[in-house]
Image 1 (tube, rainbow, N blue to C red):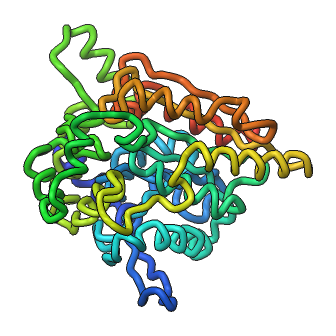
Image 2 (cartoon, one colour):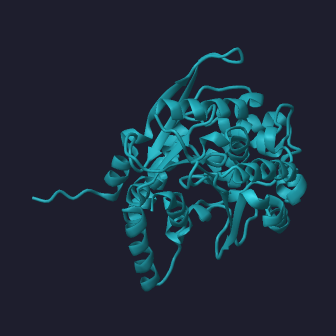
Length: 366
């Protein structure tokens, strides 16, 4: 007799996967005591010989994102790792000034623990700050035969983008940001906010609106093909991811907001304080690598057609920073705009962009 599993039960099974609930201890240093770090794996488990993408997620993008991408990554034969930054999930809180340094300590230590020698880097929104620092301080972690970095809806500071509501947010009393995670949890409701887009109450990554039957059937087919489950399961999964993520510690979102806005002392961006200057320095590093026979760094940039978090001005600034001329002979830049995309849904795998990323990281093995 065939047992029917409801969409809700399927969603529960997905979120219960052992791969979503991993923990690692970062050893004590002179700067901090031992720190717990929770993380997740989407796709092939540790031990399988596949490319690994370290995904630096946005403001509220935690290890729970692996729930969405596990089946997709399995199909693509690409591993994705999501790390809970301090004060998310079970990761130990640290002062805001230590968020970036602790992340830079965590990544190589975790990779060594997992026996993963090299990675590809991808990031979304607020995760840009962490990815750029990783790219600068730990280029040795990138695949030597196919180094790649993918920027999805990269973050641009409001002093450059001139996005008015972010400028206003940066002037809020610091004490109000102590409750930011609670506000987001209430405001966004059952639709999980993966990035800094929560500031504007963006309604989420995956949107299935009211459409005609033919359009709905096509979306259902795409969801099944790409994610491995139906739209109804996806909706149940969204609710569970939101519920579980905010049932855990989400206070990290408060300092993530401060960091994105640079609104308090200690919220500088370290190596990427000035994007233009960082690109100039990366040009020198990667041109030297290329001259010595190394592979060029492949830089992929994806914007949504409409991105209210950085606006047209922020987009142009980022594009101007990463022109091929500015990147020199050691980096190859590919920048594209996703038609109909926004700050969040560039991460919807049914739109094909994540599939392109996976194909690019597997290119070395063809």
